[in-house]
Length: 320
Image (cartoon, rainbow, N blue to C red; front, side, top):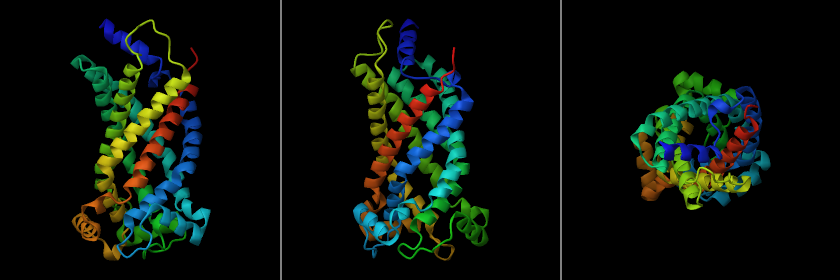
């Protein structure tokens, strides 16, 4: 028990628990910070989505050619197609996600602590459970936003329809498919994002502890707290490792989900048909279309988001 207390106290110098946060400030300041990060990284999502829906006859088959084509036809605004829709839905989805993440993480740590696993294993299990639960709760808001934004991202590209904004997409989807149309790919989204979130948070939680142990922290109750730059560097490294791990595991499901969500009503394929078409066009590597941008996206998003998130938590610690 003494060793456990030592670990908790030492790691408490680098982690801030949910009960220590001013929740109102956390949500308000968080909305601003995450909006800023989304603005910076949104174009990567547009490029990834276009690569995933490209047909074998499409000229633009690399990330650079997609960017060049977007800038040529639409300029910088083309890299932000669907952004308004995403940012409108992202704030409630993020609130749900972070609340579920933090509350579940605390409960999961309490559950696994008596099992006497190593600290990285405990962190992986607790963070993984929390990441999966948070993703499951947030999908109800996120999937319709995902469907609408992705249709906007690919409009006019490779034969896809054009729209007059997010409301026009929603109206046409509801008219042709009903409410189910806004939840196209919901099962695959859950299958993609929940494991992805679980893998991401498990990798992040465990890799941090491994890195801290490598740096010599986590064993001495009286050791000095790491300096802020060291903490940020370890969190960033954890974000990169988590992004790399999650993107490699879940890209095939993400590619299939994206294709299902952007296909029109008149040519709606089944999941099996999507897989067959991808393999027919490019072989098994077709399932990994957009892996480069997705790898970059998950690593960049993950690292930026986690640094913003950890910074946010430090800003919002309650005054004693």
